[in-house]
Length: 452
Ligand code: PMP
Image (cartoon, rainbow, N blue to C red):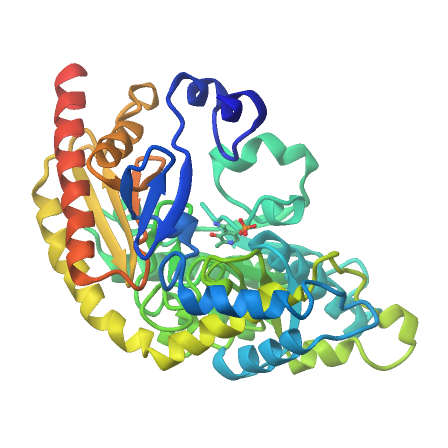
């Protein structure tokens, strides 16, 4: 009961939360989480999209212990440390071509803040006369989610999360999201892509002088409910950014480190962004660490004269933390040694097959999958695409049903999300989809009956 008495949970309606019995996790092992009562659950959300190799991994534990035996933390202000140097080198080697420098922070949100501030300052340093009072806005997509700090909320496009903070935010231009299911009549991905790219083209033609950068979640808009972009959309966005002299910020906080089936999502369309934000999977779910990678040209704008004006005034206390960097290095070593990316091919295929039966459910409007990311959109009926009323808490009840049957999953609005740990076995993936299927089938049927 101390949880209800003392803890304020994130993204949680606390009055609703306090009515229910809390789920208190005590330990994890491989693909499973265990609560304080000893109940065992498949971790179907990778503990908020971070876990890569499973819980309580002996080698990750050992990397942490080894580093703790040397030092837990010093600082990158005026000093360096070995794990952060090695990790920066490694990140430059494994991320898309052209990214040459690494700026550390400690969450996805801060990695985005850094990209936004750097992008703005870059233009001011590049040509202070030409860009005076210009290039001070950003474009992001409708339904975009880039974090919870004020800068990252400013580039957010989710009505529910972001609207309330509007008076505190800087100006953003909103481009349409390639939400094929909602934008087109018959899930026409190509038509959706053309529509969105055309609108973005028009926006950039008109406003590019004002725009410092465009920020995008490559391939999948996660928090929006796993909106999967049509093939070629990301490439099209890159081309438009280049054409209109606007920096491209790829926010791979959610999709990085194997989630979409390649190490980074940008690889799938041969896209080289100007900034790359990574966090979540960077430490395989062990510690808070993030990085903003930039192209050499951006870094170089901060060299030269006058020196004092060319400082990037930003740095969090735990920037470059040794424990986190050591565990991140071990994570990448494991990804490479165990050929994790190759192993995903069979898992992604298995997921796709297991998901097929969801299409037959009367209250499943859309099933979206990109690699190991899945969104199942619930509707009252397929023709109208109308979602269930919020007060019915259908999605929440689906999650509770799944939990009673041994899997923890999460909803995002009307969408049930599956984010399996990348090391899950084929059997575990099947178990996860089966539990989810039963939960959706039972709960939506009951809900539909009661709202007629
Ligand atoms: N960007 C994206 C695409 C995200 O999905 C998230 C978190 N879900 C963030 C940024 C923010 O990361 P954090 O919660 O670590 O601040």
